Length: 124
Picture 1 (spheres, rainbow, N blue to C red):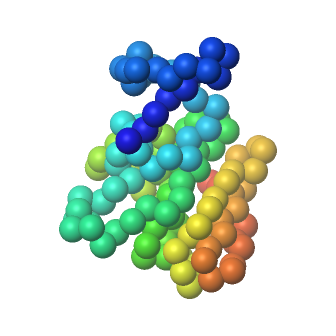
Picture 2: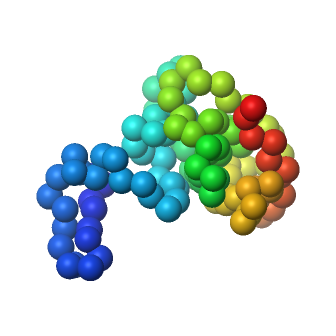
């Protein structure tokens, strides 16, 4: 369940429908229409888990880390059948990731203690 709150009135939005076109400053939740393509159709049996995601500041790329020790780069929004690029550098699942201020680099950290600094070529 995803709950939305108005921080100026301290009240909960009773319907997510009213927020469907909201422009969010970041996107770190693996759930939602704009990122439903990060979930691979052949892993619906429950053994594949997305452990971390981050959207670029320019809002055109999202990266996702999962239980197969991979970091995947998608165009944003990440819809099914969109092109993705997969990279491997960790010995365990990524635990967190973030783009640096200019989107030229992205950092990922994993449960094995590794920190990887990636150059982001994006899509295009």
